[in-house]
Length: 125
Image 1: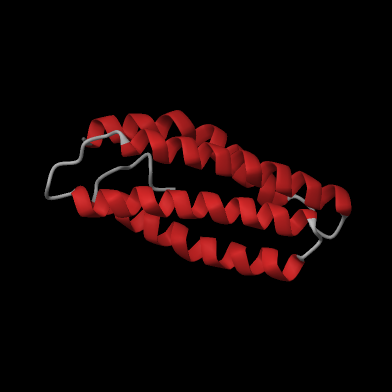
Image 2: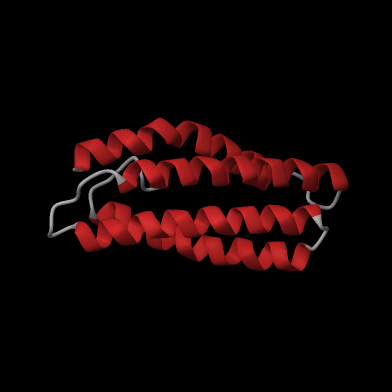
């Protein structure tokens, strides 16, 4: 399970990191920056969704199944939140976008902890 899941995560890690960097480095005080951030967030959300679907096909052993399911669920939730944040940015609603970003920061920390506990080094980012 660990090897297979790490392979799945490594498939997405570089593209996902690039999209996240583009989203965070965009100047959200300008319309062009918000558009850039929203586009990058949508790309990251799509990648996370694909990663979650691929991880969902991995069979976890019974001792790790619950944590693994939480990891996959968390990835899906972060993906949905990224799409919502992108919509908020497109609508120039910076308050909502910041709230969603803060929520995702907490979720990502939880996912990273779960990935570490499951020894999924390429999923912990």
